[in-house]
Image (cartoon, rainbow, N blue to C red; front, top):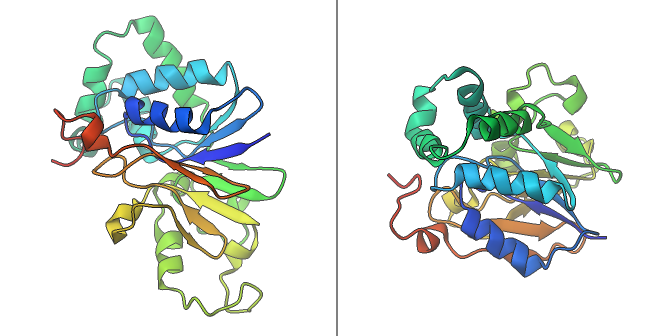
Length: 242
């Protein structure tokens, strides 16, 4: 059995299908999605619909991202967060225009049931953004931190890479897990098209919301699979490159 972690999708169904075809996924494999399924490209509702169907065929874990929280609120209460609207929400609402109320309710259930983190049997942690508690995710005080925090990633970027993981100067929260996988902050912000890895932390958001790609990584072998760039797959759209 293989396990793949898949980075932020942002409504790019064409790119997601490319990645899954590269993997040649089977019903013996597992997929862990890092959140942000919606907002950006024109197929957000279609992405969610596809993921629900996919989960009926193979083992999937879906982590909740900050954009998923906004979409959930809209589906449930009709709330249009102004920040959400400007950062892909408009396109997501448009993608739902031909969806029935029954399907929308099914998607709402999907969003409501998303976990904010997942820890596997080898003590590998998967979450959308980060966490702050020195005692681990179970002791985090606010759920929103899991899908909004960037302090953990920024701390890792600023660290002296000569520090050993066993050193007392190594951040305690990172010592709690064998590996940590996140999305949320595009590696393309640092002119890096591939996942970025420091010590035991992997960032696999490779900028699909903007000019980048969707990435999957085999968490055992670290083999990387990527789609074409999203603008090339949606040439008549701008995504979040507004």
